[in-house]
Image (cartoon, rainbow, N blue to C red; front, top):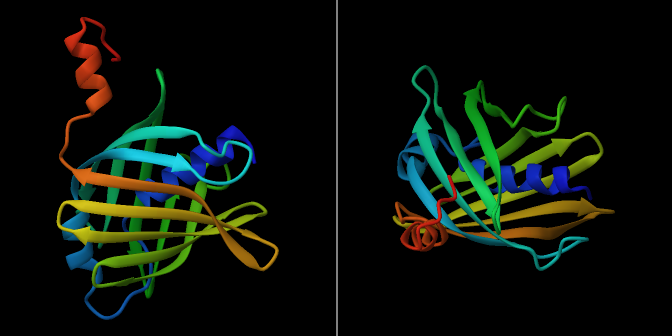
Length: 183
């Protein structure tokens, strides 16, 4: 798996906070609870980059013209940062979306999913890479995300994240306090 594929999965894990056909009426309440600022650590738990730790910061906004959301932010490993962008919207009985520039470029597509109460599960595609993402609101201020990829007939967890609502980035705050800026 390339660094770009891992970055794409990372975006998917963070940004797929809003996708999938759902039990009637579950979409909007879920999106409403997820919209806002989220920050937290994550780790790549399998593959070539296993053990790599990162920190992400995201701002989510509701879609104005349809049920869904857009998410902008970045993820950082050490001093290296990657901008992230995702858009997800309801399309008929399903959802459609893209991360970065979608599977036709260097990103991923959302292809299926469900939302039920405090959890969402979605299908991800990028060329031969198939996977899934689970986003679960543990409470109103905690969001746990797991991204898995399909290996043979089995889904293998690759990325795990624990985001908190509206927290300041602890690495950036420490750096700014020392007179050094990451921006």
